[in-house]
Length: 476
Image (cartoon, rainbow, N blue to C red):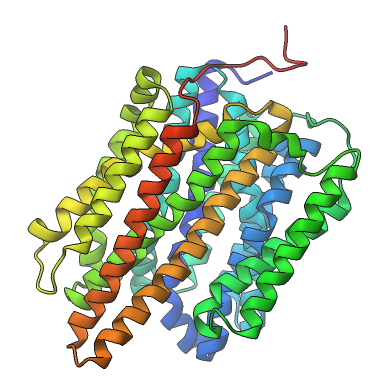
């Protein structure tokens, strides 16, 4: 049973407000790190744990959070996640010691993982008609795509105008309002997955594997990709993942039914999501570095440089993307959008040291905005549309994990390539801006290749149609 028609859309906006709060926290902290370091006396190595503690639990618990929603009710888990995130935000904002801040950030990541995994499944279950689902997913996609950019601007504004504490405290009123409205608007489901027993062995192995992998990736550049630490952690994660799949093949009520991966759209969308996330992180982070360190833009100018792309993404996500999906299906808009994104990244490869905004930044930003706006909705629909409601939380956790892991791994690899190329050019006597630009160009080219491969896979492997389905137990 779903809320009344008008309430469903209000419920969507409330869910997206909760998701936006989570998305903001992945980038809002970066701007405030210097202030946090000065205030709490962090060392350079300890400071990274303000980010890593959040990333570890967020990446590690996406899969488990989604499956718990299937088993025990999506609404119940959503409210629990919002509560954890809001209380942890209060602890972060009031933190006076390093240990409290890092611990609270870890709890924030846990709450954020649950909210991110369950919110997408709730939206898919609230909107079952193809046209409405496409529109709803467009709104959700816009929040996910634009939230990071908003976080950078909001983080700078709050830190400069008030203090770093307010980047966390601003979540308190939002969390309280979102909790209250979700309680009023969302149906009280009791869990639709078959069987009420949680696969403890599967939950422990996959969560530990993901946390090890996230830790290895986010510390790979500092520790060295071939270091004993990095190779040991990645090997341990791989062994645990193999053990996880062995467990899932044998237990009666698996955390992740392996039959899900026989759904071609789900499997393809997650591979596409990994590649695309890697390409998009290259755009967001590497282009910001190019604008700041090569062209000399201020933080505000960088934010404004992303504005055209964000506006285009908003226009597509909040209407045009849904119309394209209903007119052409999933495959064509996805492949076209990813090709446009690849072209945008390729244009940045040509950006010179003394480039201008209109000639060398705006064209690439425009194509990237078009590409992201067109592709995100179809990727999410492809990952979720073939999945029964009882597995929607798990599917949401899988696609969120794919995006998160793809983005983290892609950024780490591309940053390493850029640093190596910059170091090589510096060794030949190149000026600092020239060496930096050379490194960034290699990262942009690699990101463009990732996006092009994702477009090719989507065009070849995805089923293009978009239809509503009736699953066992839904009749009547």
